[in-house]
Amino acid sequence: MTANQYYDQLLDDIAVPIEELKAAQDKRNEIGAKVVGVVRPHLGQGVRFIPVGALAQGTQIGPGAIHDVDGAVEVPTLPAQWESNPAAAMRDVRDWLEPVLDGQYEFSTHAIKITFPDEEFTADVVVGVKQARGIKIPRCPKNEPHRWIATDPETLKKQVRARNQQFGPGPAIFTRQIRILKWLNQVMQMQNGLDRKPLSSFHVTALALALLQTKDNHANWTPLFLERASELVLQPLPDPAGVGDPLIAKNPAQASQLLAEAGRKTRAALSAHDAEPILREVFGDPKKLEQIVMATTVSISAGGALAGVGATPVRHSLPVRHHGGDH
Amino acid sequence: MRHRAMRLRRRIGWKHRPWWERWPHELLKLEHDLPPEYHHFTRGRIGNALVYRGDVELDGIGVSRRIAIVFPRRPSIYAPYVMTDGPRPRRHRWSGFRPTHLCLWYAFDPKAMRWTLDNGLIRLIDLVRVHLIRELWFMSTGTWPAPEHHRPPNRPRTKRKEDLARERRPCWCGSGRYLHCHGSGLAADELDTLGIT
Image 1 (cartoon, rainbow over the protein chains, first blue to last red):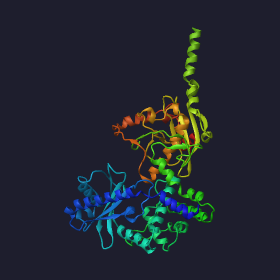
Image 2 (image 1 turned 30 degrees about the vertical axis):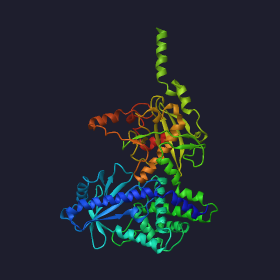
Image 3 (image 1 turned 90 degrees about the horizontal axis):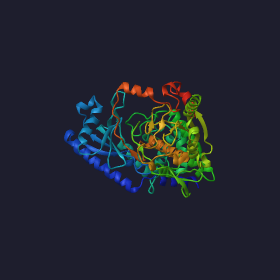
Image 4 (image 1 turned 180 degrees about the horizontal axis):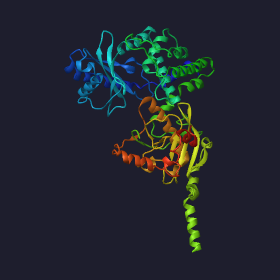
C-alpha cells in the first residue's frame, strides 16, 4: 500500500458518519436559536450565535460519533456586572438557558459545557463580547485570576475554509489534512499516556495555516508539517486571526520531540515499498480502536489480537459494566 | 490430651497456609487453558497473595503495558486487584492503594456480567486489555464509551470515619493492614515490588 492510499483509508476510518454530522449540526443550530432567544431580552437585539470549532470548520474527527459541538454567543456590549467578574457572564447565560434547554451544565475554563440526556455529544457555549476585531471571552481557570481574553474563532473558521478554496475545487484537501493531524495528536496522547494532547486543536489548525500554504498530497504534506512544526512549537505562534495571545504548547519540548519522531517515520514511509506498517505504527488503527472501545464485547482471535478484522474469533471479552464516576 | 494438642496445632497451621495450598483446585481452574500469548506471565508470591505479572498489548494504539494481577485470597470468593504501570486516570480506578487498581466490573451485576473464577485468568487478562484501551480513549476524548452503572454518590463520612477506614484497610498482599505493610514505605518501592514501575 502506498502512503497516499494509507492516508485515504485513514481519512475514511476517522470520518464521522454523515447522519451524525447532520444531527450534530441540527442540535447546534437548535442550541444557537435558544441561546439567542434567552440572551436577547437581557442584552439587546445585537446578540448573535456563531458556530465555531471543528464542526464549523469541517475538521471534526471520529472514529464513531462526534464528541462535541461548539458555538459562541456574541453580545454587543459588556454589562457592568460582567466587566470585573468574567465568570458571572457564564453563570448568567447558564441561568437563562437552563430552563429552556434540558441538560447537565458545567463550566470549563472558557465555556459552558452542556451534557444532553439524549445525545452522545456535548455542547460548549462560549460567551463573547463583540470587539472591533473578534470577541472577548472569559478565561476562568481554577486557582487562577479570572480575566477576559481576545480571540476570533469566526475569522479562523473563514481562514480554514478560504484555504480549501484556494486549493481549487474537489475534495477539501486542507481540512482533510487537518483531520489527519488532529487524529495523530490524539494518538500521540494515547501512545504516551499523557494527561492532555501535545497540542491543542487550535494550535494544530494554526500550525497548518502557517505551514501548508502550497497544494500537495497528504503523503508529502504530513512529514513536511511534522518536521517544521517540531521546530515551530518551541516558540510562541502568533494567532492566525491576529487578535488573541500567541499560542504556546503546554510542554513544547515534549511536543517537539513527538512531532519530530512522527515526522521521521512518515518521511520514511514515503520511500518504503509498503508504507502501511510504518504508518500504522504512527497513526494506530482507528477502525480497530473504534471496535474495541464502542463494543460491549470484543472478539479475540487466535494469537490474542483484539477485534481482528477478518480473523475468526476464538473467544469474546466479558460484557461487563463499570460502576460509574470517579472513585 | 496430646493428640488434641497435635490436632489443634495442625489446624492452626492449616489456616496460615496460602489460599492456593488450601484450595489447589482453584489455582488449577485459574490457570486452565492459558493461551500461548499469555504464557509469558510469571507467577510469584508477595505476602499471602499470588501475583501474576506480564505485558499486554493494547491493540489499535500500538503500545504495551505491564500489569500485575494480585489474588490475596481465594478467587472463587474474592475479586483480584489489577494494577498497571502507565498513567492513572481517575475514572474507574480505585484509589485505596497508591498503585490504583482497576474497577473492572460492577460487583453487584449478575455473574454473566462479571469475572468469576470459571472464566479463568485468560478472560481476566482480556478484560484488563480492553479496560486499559478504554482508559486511554477516555483520557483523550473525555467520554467513557462502554456501559456504566452510575451509582448514587456515597453518603459523606466524617473525617474520623475516613481516617479509621484508611487505617484499617487490609493490604493488597493479604498480610495485615495496608498502612503498616506495603503502604508504609515509599511508593516507588511498592511499585517495584509489584513489578509495574
